[in-house]
Length: 201
Image 1 (spheres, rainbow, N blue to C red):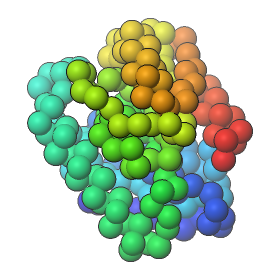
Image 2: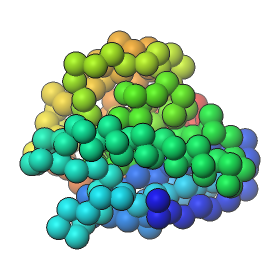
Image 3: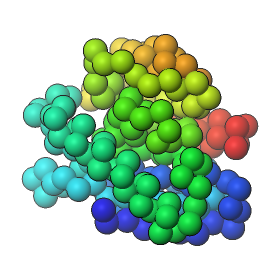
């Protein structure tokens, strides 16, 4: 997978896995990671799927309708990539915190839905529920921050509330931050994510 790895100054800190939104790339969230934790190592990944020339992490059938078969395939793909990257760059595979926006938040949530050891935690900006009707792994000890817009036309409020409930039912500790905006990524939620992150890590 096309990516950037940036070695941090503090090897104890989590490796920040950056996952862009539709049409983004591995450069999009680098400035954001620097706000959240300037000392942490960063692994920023570009999605392997193209939709009308725009990179994504998995296919969709329509707006808000995921191609579940491809989602499962791509979730396994990125999990394997993280295994390989941790060996190549010599970081602790069990010390990864994802920061994802929109489509990137959805693939991060899918990692949590499918693997109990893929991520130590996650900051999800405007995520949706990746899959429904499946048993989740035991997520006890996993910390998740969700930032969601009260007027988000792509990711309605009920999506974030449902995702919160599913993750908590699986044992995760979840914090939701509401912003009175639409689907855009705002500095308000980035600052809130930073405060949450600094309390934990």
